[in-house]
Image (cartoon, rainbow, N blue to C red; front, side):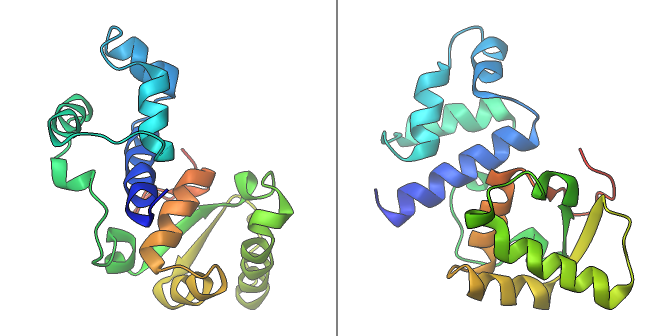
Length: 160
């Protein structure tokens, strides 16, 4: 699988999840027009999606097609200067995937004396440092956080 296919799939998954839809939910909401197995294969990068189908999917999600495409420019989270993490969801991720993020989050909580246990704001500098730890770009990391289900909308303060 190419990096582009992986990035495109991550964007598709992020948009679907932002809309609170499961793969089955997409199939149901589209009255079977979008099969869960097909959308899932697009998201995994196992199946190529044509421009025409991508446009139709953008219409279905009611987002500009450009939002479905991977973008090498900074993400909205980077531009806003912060990312909000759902700490409760973070605790349920496998340590081998999210251990570094959890240790980093705990360190920030300690520094700030912030132990609300529900959410934690990560600043742009922290996001860049974490991206280095995860060997990706800041936008790649935000996509991964979204895939993991620990990313809360850019200006949201409560878990979704």
